[in-house]
Image (cartoon, rainbow, N blue to C red; front, side):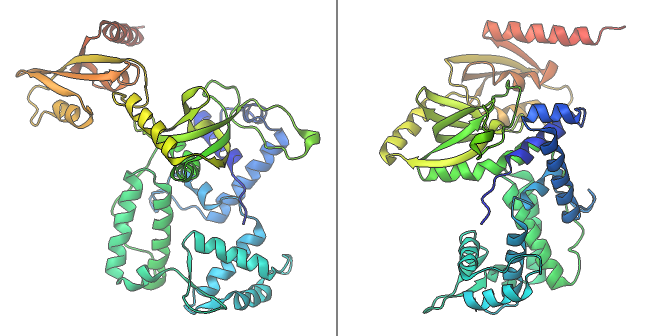
Length: 422
């Protein structure tokens, strides 16, 4: 099976979303570390993908625009045709052997594509079984394979619609979400087959603006797999300050060149999601100790050797201790933050207090009056909690520590200057 990554397309689309198309072809190519020719070829590839996916308008689909990349993950044309034939044949409901499926593929493959051999078909079946699309029937050789769709086939149309609505809500409100979107697509197609048309009008419409979050989920499951198996990973990393975000993986030694990124081999310990900015972070243990990586800068991820489980558990315990007072991933010295929140006049319930109690993590309200209350929390550093405090605007006054109070005063003065009359 094609194991080709699509790092280049991910970084291409990320840059396109961030710049809103303001870069020229040359600027795009330089930022990605590729040639203009490769840029044009990638653009044509993505246009073909969009056309083949038959994108529908927003009101007919709540999918994030960039999700189509996951549906078109690098698969060669011959593999795409082969998998479609295998699944279409098994969709008829009868369990078939590898040789029966081979005969079908050889007879139905387009003339311009080479016919598969037995080894290729068995490799395809093994892959489909690993990802849960088909199952091997119990019994003696030769083994028979069947589509894994017992659940949806056993549901009534009403139950299927209820399941579809549930998956729709969860995939749009929970992280990670891409797997949920793909499951929702499968349920929609099943509804079309059984009900003879489109499912009922969407109960909810969503539009998510954090494109990076969706794109970074391409790496998420690879890293989670390595964490579960206590394995090290290696990747080419581009820091947020790097002038480039991608470098091609050259296999021809005649065309090798130094990449702008840094090759990293490290032991992944935890993945953290930042709801404030829609970013994924990898916390890992390397030769320098605990390191933090933005997943948007990671490319060419590969698994490597496993480590001792007991030692791995020890490193995770050490990480837990360092993150004990972390608002997100800060491991700096602990500091007590004290802030006064002002209750909105004539508002019942008190939405400021409700938000503080909901989002304030382990902090607590230590003093409460009719018009305000004081909130305290101990956190690692002040950098990560500052945006949250600032988001309350005039409803929040930082009391301690003095450094944070002075920084907030300076920032609000700067904002005030922006709005002075011209």
